Length: 420
Ligand SMILES: Nc1ncnc2c1ncn2[C@@H]1O[C@H](COP(=O)(O)OP(=O)(O)OP(=O)(O)O)[C@@H](O)[C@H]1O
Ligand SMILES: [Mg+2]
Image (cartoon, rainbow, N blue to C red):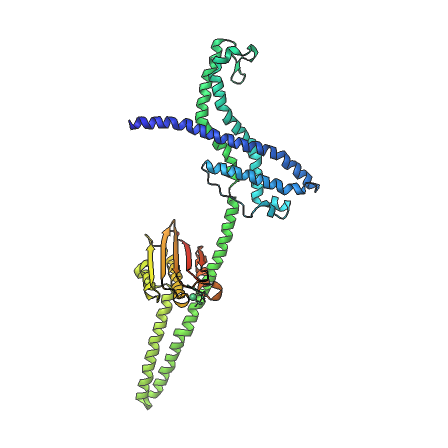
């Protein structure tokens, strides 16, 4: 029974699909007719623009082409193609000149599509529309064969003369064949008609790629920058902290040696100070090492490390981590530093009563958000912490959004590609 249902519904699917495709082919052909009328108008405008008379017409014409292209884009979307609008500017009117508009790759692609659709698209559309009419005409041919004058008694577009009754019967046979052709071919014809639009009306893949290369070049520079800043920070921390203390230890040990003979008690005192200083130096070194790659991340994973940060925060903080797999270490470290800096800011500046940290892995990207119900007004221009978050995240080709209106609340949102 269920198999029978499946066969019946499959039987219905084919004519329904053919009808739907023909409907879209009619829509496409209508756009094709508009495109066909636009071509000579564009040609006249181009010629008139050369002698400067047509200048006022040029931009409205290009705008019209954009409208037609948009119409085709919406038709293609309804056919199931994902076509993003490729335009970056608000409109062609924004272009400074006709030459500027023509230099615009999107406009050039629109014009190529216009030509293809006015020719290829229109012809394919007409074929798709004609097939069902031809099928009906040929199948019903014997019914009205006797009513037409003998010099018009021909079938298959005039290729066969149907002077006799038996010859007229070729009509229904041919009609059934054309009908079958329509059933099978209509979706394919609709696809063929859509092809120029699919290829030309989306964003230019080359331009897309060059934008991506430009972005990667910028983020690589940012990564190197962030790396250099990090090295400088470590160098300063070692220089001003541990190194200074070890120098102090050397001085103290020297003084102790001099005092050993003369005043052993004093020497002992100095050595005790030297020991304290060595311990401070060790603590400093540990802090520097932790700031490079927090060991807590390695030991307890992202969730444990963030919970530790939250429990150290003076503002009550809820942590939600939904990351089923581990991300690359550098991504986890960046997420950790983002949350660490944001929570330090919450404690330092926000006067919030509650904070919340959410980390989720969705579609290969790690989403981190830190929110507080404080007074708002976070501004990267007023310090180095938020700017540092920006640089770290940029180095990973990620995005940062800071939403912090005066009066609050504040939300720091970060997205990092996880690449795993
Ligand atoms: N959660 C927050 N709530 C309210 N104001 C904030 C918040 N976070 C940051 N700010 C404001 O934005 C400014 C910039 O923050 P940023 O972290 O860049 O610098 P900072 O914390 O002042 O110094 P540091 O360089 O030590 O991080 C802060 O001075 C503060 O006024
Ligand atoms: Mg800060």
